[in-house]
Length: 258
Image 1 (cartoon, helix red, strand yellow):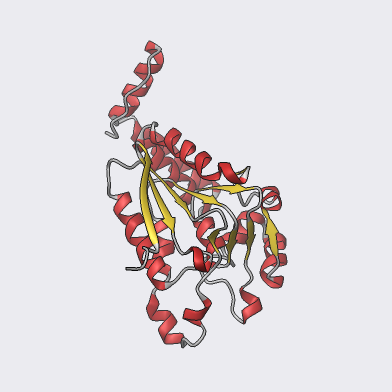
Image 2 (cartoon, rainbow, N blue to C red; image 1 turned 60 degrees about the vertical axis):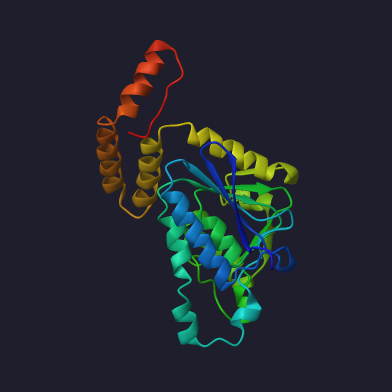
């Protein structure tokens, strides 16, 4: 039996961890890897015991892109029917926060996979890039869309059109990553942040994520209206009453997600 290409763990209460496990191929994203990532993300999204998800690889690679050997001889219809977009939607549509813990290479589809997450914790030696033009294609998982929306047109064009690779510090300067930490601390830091989030009221976390994501595609006025309505809705939750009561009473709150 070959080793599973995707593993799941529960490193702490309220936290689910998904690990890409193809070290021999720098965690390249095959169709099977994409399918399993989507399947496990969906399962964790539906699991009330999990409140935050960490997505990672190993110390040498988060994911070095799509598996080129699997793609090289494929035709347009075959690529269409593979439905790779389902993975991006599974992450983007996940109601729970997803933290990417990035060591080593996050290139092509791996970079896009990280960008689809809500928070990116990168090791000091991490390498990012969209090198698809070097093999005759373009990014297909958000590299021409999420990348410029995050770092701006001119920075994105510089890397999409050259295929050059850039490091974690430059990624941080471009606001592409949330935090840069020593390589050995990446997964530990991501899990610690996930624990911090998991201890907070789940409904507020879910709706805060939704407000940020939906608001980014709307006008400022529409986004502010969404924010206001979301805030008002949370006053119907038990967690709002518990959180404010605990603050007044100077005790630790007990959030139930209701």
